[in-house]
Length: 125
Image (cartoon, rainbow, N blue to C red; front, side):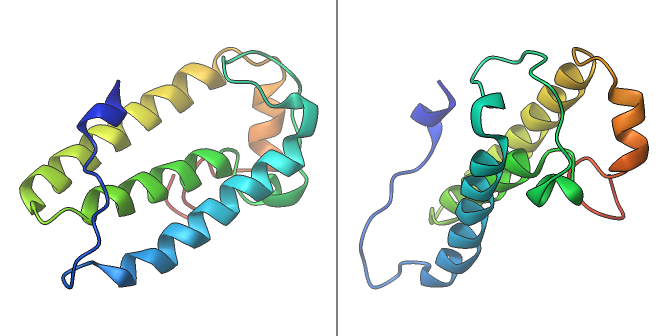
């Protein structure tokens, strides 16, 4: 549903080409997270076990960080900055709500929080 509100990419002389670098870096983080999770990955939230390998050594939700940055780069490629900021705030709120909801579902999460202290941004949250 959110995808219907995202701007589409267009090729023009005004394209924000510099957004491609963080977009590709965040997409790489998503792929690294998926590979690390392997069979533990699922679309619907569920307790499939925890991992502290790969990017999960540094963050508890690296895939969500990659998704958030990638979506933000797509949104900010739009020439309408007001809409871009509004959608970025909404996407951030939704992703943070998703994280908090998911953390309540997983057994042993208190121990995991001691091993990997940061949810999304090291040193911040």
